[in-house]
Image: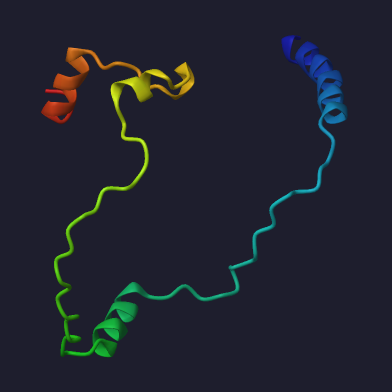
Length: 107
């Protein structure tokens, strides 16, 4: 008797759901890749090993050392940081957060 009542109640609910969910056009279309054969990993690796040349490419010549020059403009001072709006300021870190970072994560 219970199964007859539940089936009678489920039919109107299914109709309501079908009316609420309308068919839509998908925004993303994926190509059908089932017709293309999948490559064998072992064969691909073998062809890569065969195709790579045994000699190394010549290394680029070393670049001369150039000292870094400071960028002109206003230096980051405490005054300039305090003038930033609150949404651009970094939240102060607690000692526990600093210790956590120094440890590299949980113990």
